[in-house]
Image 1 (cartoon, rainbow, N blue to C red):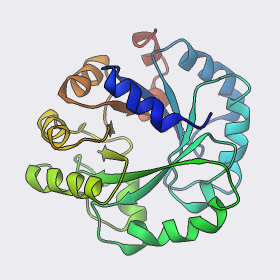
Image 2 (image 1 turned 60 degrees about the vertical axis):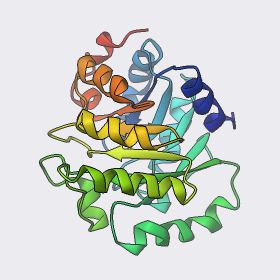
Image 3 (image 1 turned 30 degrees about the vertical axis):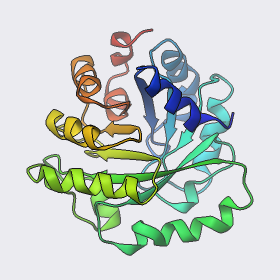
Length: 241
């Protein structure tokens, strides 16, 4: 399975909306894998994202191996660090935190990843990662020592996203952060989408089916939901296929 980006482009072209369930290996109980994946399989989810801000070595690889026993959905790495990269996954979002000004997360970590990626057969998808304030300090902000973009400075957000596309990034990811108090405002999603020719991912703070539909209607091509399912697996009942 090495055509994940092509399939995303095709879905966008067809007007289909995509949903990724984000699993943080550091917060996930391995013995709950079959039950959790069964619920994902019965939902409208199209992808499984794996990653977290801080994850112990080898935990990601073990989790993905277990997930593959129960699911054929594409598994995409959404790594917080080089240590989370594993060939067990199908693809990797090669993230650059373009909203921040810490060179380690703009290019430093990426350079360190190359020697590892050279030995792997992962589909690598360059992704401009844009962190937007949500009402509280996020793990991404703490780990990367960067500031999120102000949600009131919409043009700056739009220009940052567009700059990522012009730099050659294949996806733009607007992120409110794990456990965000507020999702990305709909007018931000809409205005960013109107400027892009590449697919737009939106994540963070989406806790209801209504918020999910609002994000799609505003222009999100792929929505990522994580914490909502960690806190309440019954949310899957609202998203059955």
